[in-house]
Length: 171
Image (cartoon, rainbow, N blue to C red; front, side, top):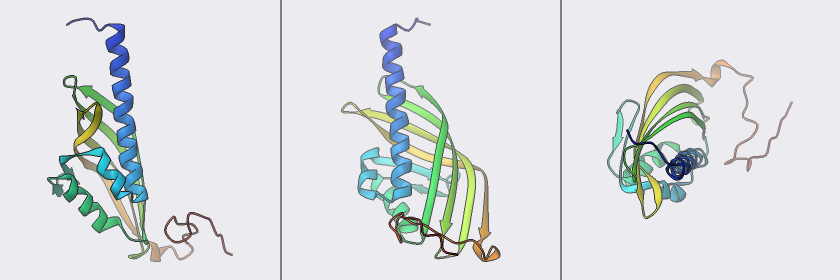
């Protein structure tokens, strides 16, 4: 195995950082419902396999349409945190990554809260000097759902979509 030069090592570290920023941007776009900006993270022919392949789509447009259909409501609130990236290169313009994700979904339209953990399995390609997602998807470690009606004292006190993100705690 050839020894990596300092220049190659720096290039690899910079590429890893670009891929990490790409994944973070994807998660921010999901949580903030930034569908137009999300188009910039995928190649047009991207694929996905969410929830162990239960939800699979074969284009950037289909992926974003599915996300919009489920999430683009004022009552839908989510937070997705990805960490522990394991990124491996499969050439100068190809990489794969595994990410731990922890998420919470609060859906006031259906009065439920869902939380869980999973591992994302992604593939990336570099096109015109920019890393993009070629495939994304996750397999759940666990997931739970709770009725918010079972916790009558639980109130939503801030929402980007109903209060502009400002907190309003009422007694």
